[in-house]
Length: 337
Ligand code: ADP
Image 1 (cartoon, helix red, strand yellow):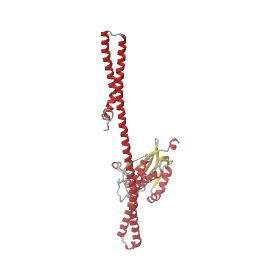
Image 2: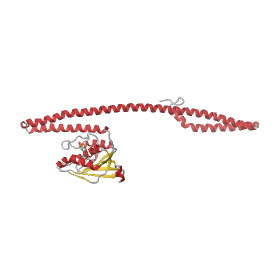
Image 3: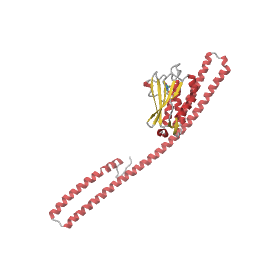
C-alpha cells in the first residue's frame, strides 16, 4: 500500500478527509460555545470596559483563524499526498499496460507466423498425399479391385477434409486480428456473390434458394460478411434429410437501427438442448459420414460478425428446419431513406 498524507495509507487519509467538514464544524461550534460562555461570565462578573469586549472578539477571531489555518494546511497536505499516490499508481499501471500490450503484440505476431507456417507446411504434404493417390489410381487403377479403389477414395476424402480443416483454422485465426475497415456494404451484391460461389452445389443438390428483395446496406466489411453468409447458406443446403432437396430463404428485417439477415431452411433442424453451444468451434451435432464438415463454419460466422460489431443467433425445431440470423448496424443512408 502506498503511503499518503500524514503517515497513514490512502484509505486512512481518505476517511480523514471525508470526515473533515463534520469535525471542523463540530470543533468550531464547541470552541465558539465555550468561548461565549466563559468570556461572557468573565466580562459580566468583572464588569470589563468596552475595549475589553473588542479585544475578546479579536482574540476569538485570531484563535479561530489560526485553528482554521492549521486544519486547512493539514487537509491540503493529505490531499496532495493522495494526489501524488494516485499519480504514482497511474504511472505504474500505464507502464504495466504498455509492457503487457507489447507482450501481447509479440505473442500474436508469433502465433500468426506459427499458424501461417503450420498451415503451409501441413498443406504441402497433404497435396502430395492427394496427388500420389490420384497418380496411383491413374497408373495402377486397372490392377486394383473394388476394395483397393475404396481405400483410395478414403485417402482422397481424408486429405480433402484435412485440407479444409487447416484452411478453416487459418481463416478462424486470421479473423481475430485481420484489420477491418467498416463501411456501408449493400447486402444484395453480398448475397449474389454467395449464390455464384455456391451455384454448383445448389444445382448438384437440386436445392431451391429464394431471396426476398430488396435487401438494405449494413455497416460491415464485404469479405467478412460474404464469408459469414456463405457458411450459413452452405449449412442450410447441407443439413437436409437424405434425398430431400434443400429449400432456403434469405430475407432482411429492420430492427431499430439494425438489420437482421435471416437464412432459413426447412432441413433437419437442431434439438433445443443443443442450440446453446452451436457457435463454438468444433461443435458438431450430426454424424460426419452423413454431413461432412469441420465444425468451424459457425464459429467463423460468429467471430466475423462480432468483429463487425454485430450479433448472431439461431432458432430451430428438430426435424422442421432452422433459422439462422446475423444482425448488423444498418448503413446510415438506409436509415435516412
Ligand atoms: P460444419 O462444418 O459441421 O458444418 P458448422 O460450425 O458450420 O460446422 O456447424 C456446426 C454444427 O451445427 C453442424 O455440424 C450441425 O450439426 C449444426 N448445424 C449448422 N447449421 C445447421 C443447419 N442449418 N441445420 C441443422 N444443423 C445445423
